[in-house]
Length: 299
Figure 1 (cartoon, rainbow, N blue to C red):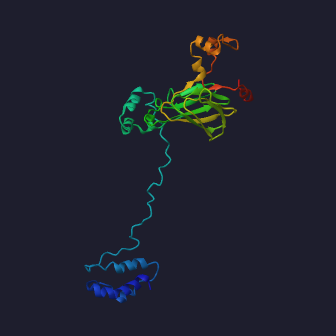
Figure 2 (figure 1 turned 180 degrees about the vertical axis):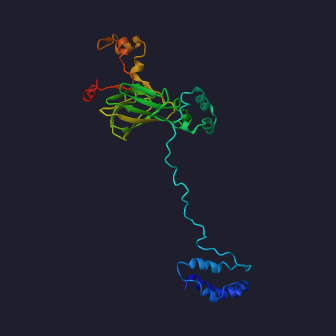
Figure 3 (figure 1 turned 90 degrees about the vertical axis):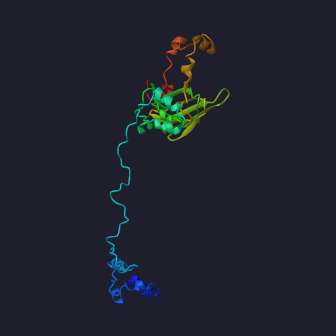
């Protein structure tokens, strides 16, 4: 006998005492005996037997298991966001002094968000960067995303540079006057050096892929690719405008008499006087060191 039938037989005497009006509409024992014990039909016939037990005595429509709502997820409901191609970054705000000024003057962060109408403007593409973001030389190039080239950074306190150093590529000695730098290698190898200030020791490191170092704010530092394959690094800064100052290019940009005095007067280099030497200073990113150039048969 099905367990539902046993339960109803056991419950019937109590229902007779408590709810006489309900007993009048209960199925007779002879009907209970017709309730199938088959596993296939038991849920439907049990629901049919109990559906008539209502206070009004009026049978309600029977509900079968076939009519019961399914809890299984609909096949039409998407389970993912799909794999549509990512939209291109919007570079229309890059280097725009008007929107930069508005973002700087916005009183609150939500106002800055509202000033940037296109969601794609919050994306920066290092493979297709805006104009005026690259520093190029014979040894590679770097691409910066700062408050000028990527105005959505305004108010966030961060910025980033990605460097692509070719074989023997050399990011010449420089400083960032307004931020420390964390630098992680994502491809290849880098040799790094930094000196914090006068009297501090020089810190040397060789970084492999996914190894990182730090250059303190204002520290003179450099990165060099000692291999014959490209190296790539990602540099993060704790300001939207870290600034950069290349030491050789800046120093030799001073008046000649100042440079000569700093170097001990009558400066010559490989037979060149100072004015001619200035024109020989390579643009960053440069090629070096000589031993690497020979190893990679460059030049």
